[in-house]
Amino acid sequence: MADRSVRPTERASVLIIVLWVAFGLVSLAIYFANSSSLELRAADNRVAALESEQAIAGAARYISNALANVTEPGVPPDSATLKVEAIQIGTARFWLIGQPLDEEDDLEVTFGLVDEGAKLHLNTATAAMLAKLPRMTAELAAAVGDWRDADSDPSENGAEDEIYGRLNPPYRCKNAPFESIEELRLVYGFTQDILYDEDANLNAVLDRNEDDEDATLPNDNRDGVLNRGVLAYLTIHSKQSNMKTNGQMKVNVGTVDPNGLRTLMTDAGISSQTMGQVLARFPADNGQGGQNGGQNQNGQNAGGTSTTNNSVLQFYTRSGLRAEDFALIEADLTVSTNSVIEGLVNVNTATATVLACLPGLDAEKAGALVAARTGQTEQHSIAWVKDALDAQVADQLGPFITGRSYVYSADIAALGHHGRGYQRVKLIFDTTEGGAKIRQRQDLTHLGWALGQNVRQQIAELQNPP
Ligand SMILES: [Ca+2]
Ligand SMILES: [Ca+2]
Ligand SMILES: [Ca+2]
Ligand SMILES: [Ca+2]
Figure 1 (cartoon, rainbow, N blue to C red):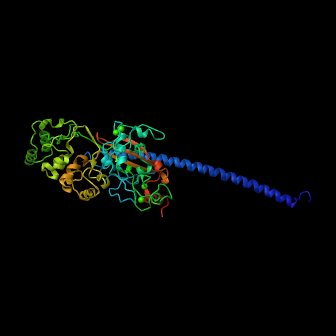
Figure 2 (figure 1 turned 90 degrees about the horizontal axis):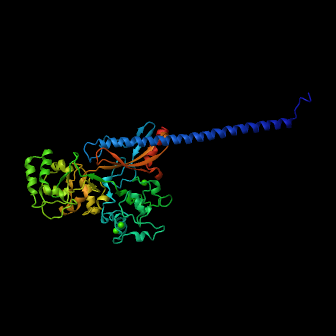
Figure 3 (figure 1 turned 30 degrees about the vertical axis):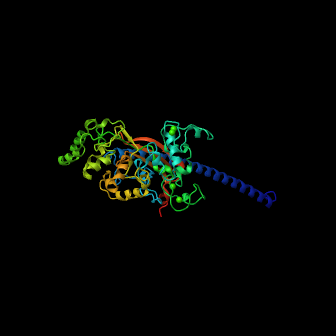
């Protein structure tokens, strides 16, 4: 009996050892379970990121197709059929982050394609036009001019090699056109703040961190209004072909080409009576007129005769055409002999801020223009501009505007399953040569979440239905 008995202290220590071993085993199990769940989670995130990457590739094809199949060249895809929000591809979704027409619309994301023609062209806009943008000054605009001009002579208030040579580290002035709008960061005087201002994630929305003073980056003024930097208003992509869809040059109405104009009006079904009246207003000039009209070097008119027009708008004003007849031929008219025209601003889609930069306009007149275009029936025409402005102002503005756009950007944000794997890519689509070609791809994922509060909430509700 005695040797079979175990002393209580021994029994206790065996128990403690057993407990320790059990504890160790459980810890190990928990450790491995945890690390494998971490690994699972990491793998899951990688899968989600791959899914959103695939969604972006799908979005690119979807948009390409929509742009290649528009009803008419220069007219955006029908907004009633183009899907722009929470489009599902497998378990992923994508959104197109747009730009609001009314800039005071800054509390939630606007969805849609972005018209590059609604912006100022950084390579073709004059320094005077650029200087009128928010955050710009005459000095900054002059420095932009010197950066892109071929010479090394500083313009008034500008900056050429001599100034860049004094920077630390020094570099050379580019003396060539901009290849991206972000290149502005290299131009003398430009800062991150001037480029982005409060819209640090470039989504045209006043996100929380953009309205909390210096609690989180960026520094903002917490006034409940989004102040946007110059990047929002600039492009290097807007352009249009000077060819008709059949490959022939458009009809020159700079120095009016009566034969071309007659053919064009006939094909459009404009009555012969109207045609006669229009042609009578542009009698062939002795030396320059008639069929030689297209041989003007730069497409601008040197003369002051009534047979020359500085713009398609001026031609329309003088032609006596009715707006609906003009709209039929407008897309095939030009005053230029170049094969491509860069940087015309689409007066039907530009914001008042951009319009205010154009010659003849200021903030007040631009506001009036935007008010006048609302409810226009000929949505891709410039005819309405004639009635919205004084003749003199319209003549100044005419050479810088268009009614159509051929280049769009798609700012695509995508999420994989469970709302994970956020990615954002901006693509530039160019339709000037028919079809839709991608000209530039820029990854914007590093700017962080840009889909606003509503989408965040929608995603949360999808994961945990109420
Ligand atoms: Ca230069
Ligand atoms: Ca210069
Ligand atoms: Ca923002
Ligand atoms: Ca603000």
